[in-house]
Image (cartoon, rainbow, N blue to C red; front, side, top):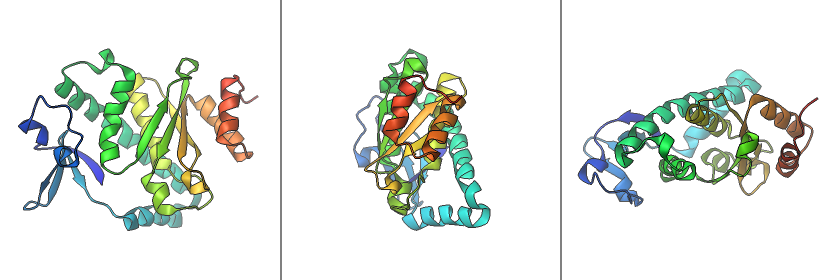
Length: 227
């Protein structure tokens, strides 16, 4: 399921003070007559098959080759930036508080919940290195990696862009993101690094040199940079 981020009639209007809307039928409103699916936050959703994801990825690769990864990342960035503005509006409307005055972990879990409900997977955010200027996200059941299977390389570029775009708008500081571990490389889950461009460049270099996600974590936490 894909979030089209177009505000319309919402299930929330029936229960404006309800926050525990985590049942499938609570979160989505299915209008069979109109053929629409609207979620709790007023975004119109569409259903997409695995064939759509395969067609999108393979079609881009056929057209532009290796540049397809950069295009998917750019698409994700724009999506993340737009969704950050949409999220701020519906969060402050529902919870009646400014996002800047909210516990960060609660804020992030509230943002990601719709993505989980739409089939984009579950996540864990590791905030342990935030004071050093970077953080890690573990993503379970990536829609892209699950669909493409074990292809021996990272494939979740649209997720990396989504995270980069959203966190850039959230902290009002330019951030980038890279996938350093992927289900499509035979791993059990995907792992992303978010940080400044210097750290992302270092992680990309180490990854190309054969470093594992664990190696990259150790190097970053020890303060290692590219010379």
